[in-house]
Structures are given as C-alpha cells and as structure tokens.
Length: 297
Image (cartoon, rainbow, N blue to C red; front, side, top):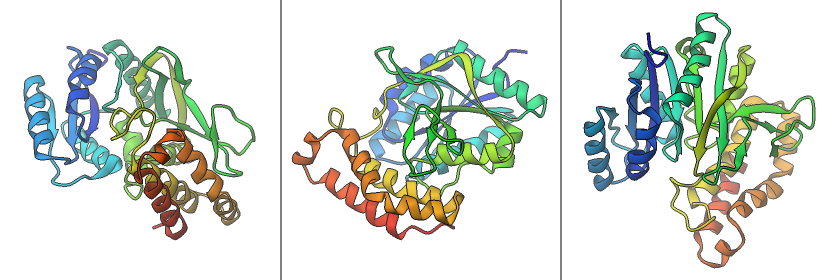
C-alpha cells in the first residue's frame, strides 16, 4: 500500500485558482492522494477557473454558494473525504506547498498515530519563499496577555500548530468535531491545537517535512499590507478564543491588553498602509468593536 493511499489533501479556495495551479499540483504530483478543493465563493470568474482546474487534475470539487470561511470550508472538505473512505486528512493553505515526499512524511505520522491510538496533530516546519524559516513548527500563545512567540516563556503558555498545513487521522478529527466555525477566519488553528491537547493528543512537528508559505498570498493586499478582513478577524478572534477556553481572570487580562494587541496586529502590515487608505483603519476599528462585544457560544 502506498503511504498516500487513504490520504486526502483538503484546500479551501477563495480567489486563489492561480495559486492552486502551481502549489497544489506540485504538492500532490502523481502520488495518488485524494484532493478535495472547497471553493468558498468569491466570484463567478473564479468559480469558472477553479472548476476548469479541478476537472483538469481530477480533483474533488465542492461548491458552496457563499463564502463559508476557513473552518466551515475545511469541515465540508473533511466530511467529503471521510465519506469517500479517507483515513488521514491533510489541510493545506492555497499559498503553501510541499512535495509528495513531505506529504508522505506528514501522512505517515498521522496514520501511524491513528493506528496506535497515540493521537497526534502533525505539522511541518514552515519556510518563507526565500528559504528562510517562517516557523520551526510550534508557536506559543502566552496566556498572561495573549501575545505570541516562537519560544515558551511560562509553564502555562499554549503551544499551537499553524493551519497553513496540518495532518491528523480520522479518529482524532472525529473526536475534535472539526474546526470551530465561530471563528470564520484566523485562530481556528490555535483553537484546534488547544482542544487536541486537551484530549491528550500530541502536537508533533514532523522531521523531514516542510512547506513553503507565502503568507498573505491569498489576501487582497499591497506589499506587506494586510487585508481589512485580516485585521478585523485576527483582533476579534483573539478575544473569542479567550472567552471559549480560558478562565475569567485570563479574559480580564486579555481585555485590558486589547489596545496593545490591536496595535501589534495593525503594525504587521507596516506603517505606510495607514496613510494610503481607510481600509486598514476600518479593519482595526471593527476588530476592536467586535472583540469588545463578542460572546462565546
């Protein structure tokens, strides 16, 4: 049996057919892995392009009528893959790619763990397009104030794996119940990692596997600038995560740190963007308002 038998690569597309034509094709090659593309609706032109591309490469294509977000699209793709008999799920961003060898390494880690009931959520190292290290695997969420870094600074820091590429077995996925769709965009991977660890699963960075991630390749942005949507949901979902998962004392600290957190998120796109248009200002403002009013379901 091939390592990639029973493996499904799931990609949520939003206006990224051109990226998939390059990134997804070289990731899968002729490995035999099932490919499931969920086209979260962006335009009729994009839908026609992704439909042609999927037909050309024999990908399974799901066509929801609206933009269902990353979590919703991933859950649709996973349900389709599992119904078709897949036992390992690999989630991949449109702006990220690996090769069949890297895909096999990730699938092997998830498959072996699933068979041994040693539950694992697996991820690769993440590189920038220039070959520099974007992430060595684990990132830590600092429970004291909701900031993040690549190193643990306190015993209660929360480790998480990037949703740019994640692999897990069908049984762990079923236990988790998929991604939490309340987030819509951003922080779903932090939440999934948190819940996986709470179930006793290991968060594993797979040796020998890496993806190249052109962060922001799927965003409507200029240069380093981020999209209005990015600012809004990254700021909002920080507080949503706290409300869903942390103690009241943590939530209060995170609320007090909201102005500093919003400023840090805004500056990820550089300062120049704020003199070039109203979009970044509007995204940050909406994010803060949403964060103050968000309620956990």
